[in-house]
Length: 447
Image (tube, helix red, strand yellow):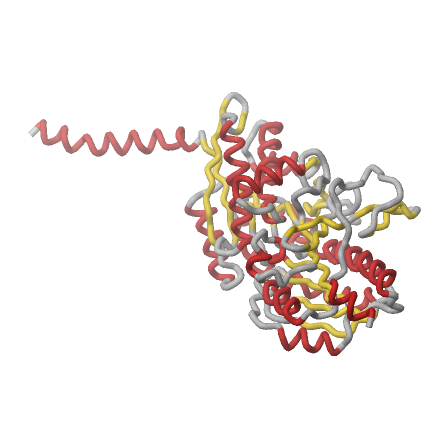
C-alpha cells in the first residue's frame, strides 16, 4: 500500500519540478514575434531580417541584461493581411496571449496593423512596425501616450513623407525628360492601389503635381491584387502621359510593369512599386519591367553609409535577394537589443523610455524619432537629407541600378536630382548610376 502511495506521489513531484523550473528556463529567453504576410515577399523579408539579426546576437551569447545573457527566440506569425484582416488579428492574439512574446515587429497593411496595434497595446507589448505607412498609427501615440507608447514605426517613413519622397523622385525624372525630349509640359498619370495608406497620397498628388508644373491626365485605382491592368494602361496611353506615377505595394505591381512593357508604352514608371523591389522581378515579368523605377531602401552597390554595403551583401549571400524596407526587422531588433542592454532591463516601459530618444545609424541612414508641434512623442521616424530618404533604383537590362537621389545644395535646402552635382557633398551616396530613358520612348519623341 505504501509503495502504491509512493508511485502516486511521483507524478505530483514531477509536475512540481516542471512548474518551479519553467520560470527559470523562460528567464533565459527573449521572445520576439515576427508578424506579416509570410506567403508574400513582404513577409519573407520581415522573417529574413529578423532571423539574420537573431543569429548574429545569439552567436555572441545573446542579450546582456545585467549579469544574465538572454537568447533570442523568434516566433513566426502569418498575418495573411492582404487577404483577411480577421486572420491578422488572430495571429497577433496568438503571439501576445499564447506565445507571450516580449515584443513584436512586422505588419504591412495599415488596416490590419491598426487592429493588431490595439491588441499589442492591450497587453503592453512592444510593437515596432516595418511596413505600414499611415500616419494615424503614430498619431495615436501623441493623442493617448499611456496606451500607445509601446508602438513605434521602424520603417518606412510615413505616407506623408513617402509622397514627398515620391514627388522629389518624379520631379527629378520630369526635369530629365524635359531636357532630353524637349517637352514643354510633362503629363502624369497616377496609378494607385485601393488601400487606406494610399488615399491621402492620391489627394496630395492630384493637387500638388500641377503646382510642380505638371499636368495630371487622370487617376486610376486598381485593386491591390489585380492581375490585369490593360484597360487602365490603354486609357493612360490615350491620355498621352509621359510619366506613370505608381503608388502600389500589392501584387498588382507585377502586371502593371509587365503589361506596360509588353505595350512598349512611351511613358516611364516612377514612384512606389514594392513588387519591383524583388530580385526575381525581372524573371517574373519576363524582362518587361525594363526601365521601371521605384523607391526602395537598399540596392546592391549603393552605399548610404559604411554599414550599407556589408549589410546588403550579407543579406544577399544568405537569402539570394536584396533587403527591402520590411527587412528592417533586422535594424529594429538590433536597436531594441541595444536599448535593453543600456537600460539594463527587458521591462517595456524602460525600453520605451530609452528607445524613443535614441538616434541610431542604420544601413539605410539615420533613425531618429519625431515629436509633434506640441512636443508630444509620435514614435514616427524622421525623414529628409541626413536622416532617411530612401533610394530610387531602375531596372536596367536585368539589373537593379541605383539612380536616385543625388543631392544638390540649392540654398536654403538640398535639391533632389537624378543627375549628380558638380561637386560631391556630405550627403553624396556612393554607387549611383545614370537614369536611362526607355529607347522606345526616345524613338517615339524623335518622330
